[in-house]
Length: 254
Image (cartoon, rainbow, N blue to C red):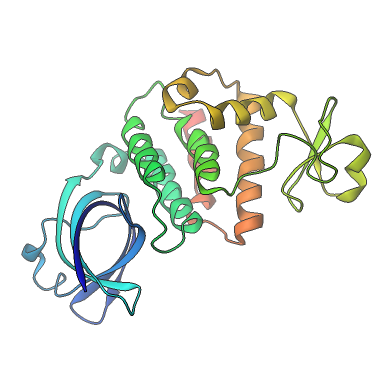
């Protein structure tokens, strides 16, 4: 058994027996881990955090060799991102980011760039001039960092360069050239601007991505394609995604 201290984001938490909690963390140095916090429900003063979803904490845990569940002996809150909790839309988007982070990550597969991206995106959601673009950019960059991204550089079926209109196939995981449309009759048309936007966001840093203009039509197609791709290949329905369209419609009417 070894002891470790690291920064961590809370993905989700659930009760364990009558006094304890099991929390899934995404850590800076160890990737996704599961931690047992004994006695926190009856003696909360033992820990300097309430372990709310997407809060940033510094934890101390004992890593066991024979199990994926590790004992957390210390947990101190660093940032609760309170501005996200006071806005229903931002709360929903931050919750989705945590769901996606958890779904894309294997247990104890370190990816410090993913941790840093998530922290930075959560922080930037406080800026009113960019907050609506952050979730879309996060999806693209998180998929890229995880190695689980759509194939957009050429036709996913024949690998030829695409020089004309193309379709996007969820089933095959990428673009189809006109000669390969028959490979997936359910594939849908995709704007060339949408493809260019995804490739630009993948290749550039976050500050450059935020300066990129996203017209409403491209953004709608981006979100539609990315959400369908994620749900199809992860075989998972995200709870937070069910309410986000409602929140977006409510914002448009305000």
